[in-house]
Image (cartoon, rainbow, N blue to C red; front, top):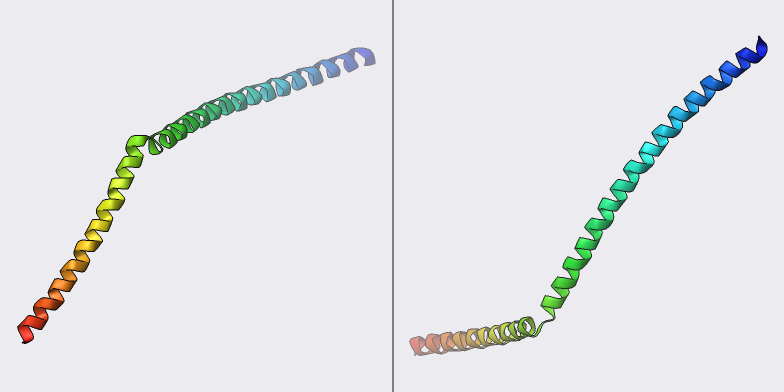
Length: 95
């Protein structure tokens, strides 16, 4: 009778452990799926980053940056000229 009882207890424990192991296995599968999705997203971000770096270092982009700098310099020169003309105008008005 004791052996029968021990055997039943062991079967019960085995079933409980099987249920726990099954739950843990499902958790691991879910985590693996999440990890796979995150790795895919990271790969996409890396590819986009490479594309942006490639575009920003392209000849066309560098040429546009150069033109922008030249335009900024021209604007500053015109602002200085305008200021100078304003001073000259004010001095003429006071004469």
